[in-house]
Image (cartoon, helix red, strand yellow):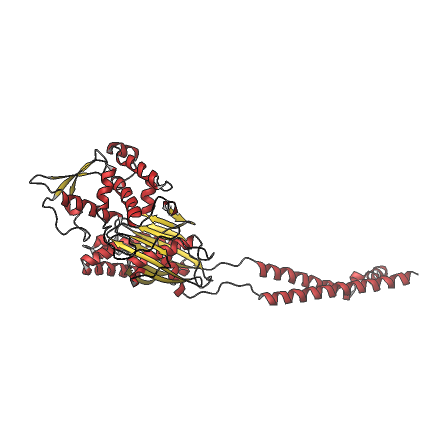
Length: 497
């Protein structure tokens, strides 16, 4: 027993000071490790969400956007999280049954609910922007357009989101927000590079927008923006009735008016439709729009017969434009002022879909004309055989639509064979659809308060101070232990001597 007690007294690990030092050492090491882990663990990124409904002339699309709660240069970093195309036609088609316009959005809005975390629903803003289809309806029947919007508003107000309004946006807004989208997705704003122009083609209108230093004749010719701390002034113009679908109505109207027939059923030989194409159509399907002539042909139906002559097709397409009237230094068409084109352009929406189908997105202008001429002369039965999965409504119109796009860009917007290479036909950039909705959401985030992100438990300066203090205490304990061991070792040697 006495021997064991003597061994413990000679062994420094059994001394009380050493035990205290060891415990303190362990506590300090544990504190250092714990603080480092807690301070450097990944911070959960907070996101805010927004929903924009694009109520176009042919259909409605619902876009869900998200951006970090901590914004950059007072502009949220918005990305597209989810998209849904509403089944059926655009909301303007419900003008006879306005109360059905809102419920038509139900399926896509339920998808939006699933795409956004439930705790964020009440704070997520919802905006609906109606474009040229509703602009035309308002022009034709203001009461009907108001009833359609009311139905949409009542439905969206009943969703769990924060409804912020439904309105018919102007053509200038549509063009300008499309310009923001193209340049935002191309990262031109943050990199302070030259901006890219935007070319948008819908069913009922088309827009051209680009940054220009020219002095504008009309206040409607420009829009002012402030993004990422920089001012932007852009030229923008929207042509109502010159979207792809309405342009076709204009085109058919001109031909029907130019070739009246006697008592028999009218036959329209159309160079913009494939040879062998032969359909009986209702005159009312053309003259149900305020874009066309108020004077309708006397016949209720006509036979639409394709001839597939591209040269004559382009000649007839040019007739729906007025290229002779211009009171300014330079014009696009119909007497509308347009400054000289500048820089590259992103062409999206129907511009992309038509040119992509025709495989003309990367072809020079002259090559595009030759390929389009060959396509238009292809027999209709061969076209349907080669594209069985494409709906006939779209398939029958590609010859006209392609010709219309080439004519609009070259003769209307003044692109040449040399500047044609500056047009980039785009569908998506950085996994987001090109269109006006993202620009709209981006601009609106300037009005949404920023939310403080999750931060480390200790401020950086305090963290550094504590680390230094812990290291100092650790060093002190090591020195203290060393001194105690050295003293104990010397005492043991003296006892042995």
